[in-house]
Structure formats: structure tokens, C-alpha cells
Image 1 (cartoon, rainbow, N blue to C red):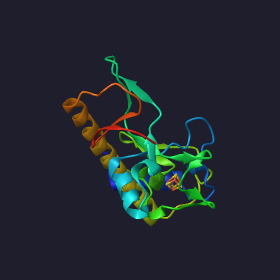
Image 2: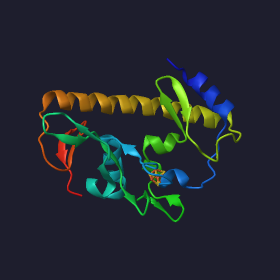
Image 3: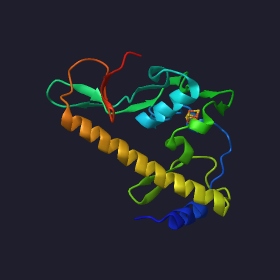
Image 4: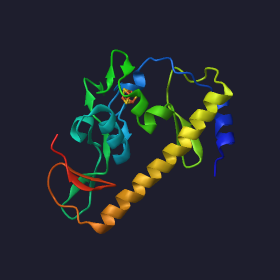
Length: 180
Ligand code: SF4
């Protein structure tokens, strides 16, 4: 299991400083810029913005075919408008304090215990110990939140039969129909 200190050390040795370019908030190629969001994250954004669920999130585009007539999405991503996150405006994030874990930790992510770094022009810039510790802590919180959402989805799939029909999404809260 990766310790926070070891992770922070890896982040420091890679280096990172956000340049504010906003590319991680936009779609630079097909399927890039998709930000997966959990139910808890969507509800936090709803509380911060007053927007309804379907104005914040849309079904994740990849679907699962259960072989019994049902095709459904396994979760949500932030809505996109004009090839960018709908909350990216005027060169900045309009929900910065409520932004999802993926945004908080970009360009880093954990694949198991392995630190993975996405393409980013801020990669390689000097980073101080405090900032590296903050990213490490966020990465571990993100992993835990993602595991919790995945367990929730598994539990819903075990308890429910997913109906056939358009716009079906299975998330940790249940089986839903998207009308966006
Ligand atoms: S929520 Fe904010 S940081 Fe995340 S993709 Fe949207 S605009 Fe960018």
C-alpha cells in the first residue's frame, strides 16, 4: 500500500505546477476531457450551484450490454458544452471549491499503487513539499471515493434487474433513467 509520504515524494520528483491553460477542462481529442463524477460529487455540486442533476451530469458514454436485453451506462460524467466542461468559462472553473476529485488531482492518478501522470504542460515544474503532500493526500482520498462508488454500483447490480430501454444509468444510488 502506498504511503502518503512515498506518494508525495514521487509527485515531487515528477514536479507539477498548474499553468492555468484550461486544456484539462476541454475536449482536445475524442473522449478526452471527460470527467467521471460520483453521486456524492454531483450532489455536492448541486448544493453549491442550485442546479438540478441533469444540468450537471450526463451518462458516461461507454455502455455495458448485460446480454439479457439491457444496455446501460455505469455512472456519470460532467456535462460538456462546446467541447469543454460546462463549468469552464472565461478561462476558469466556476465550481472550483466543489470540483471533482479528478480535477483536484489532475494530471496525476493512481492505478492501484502506481502513480500515473497524464500529458500536461505543467508537468516537470518545481513543486514544494506542502503542495506535493496535498496532491498525495487528494490522490488517496480520490482512490477511496472511487472504491466506495464502485462497491455501491456492485451492490445495486446485485440487488436489481436492470430494465431494457434508453437512457438507463446504474450508479451507487440505484438504477436511473436519464432524461437530459
Ligand atoms: S469542474 Fe472545473 S476543473 Fe473540472 S473540468 Fe470542469 S471546469 Fe475544469
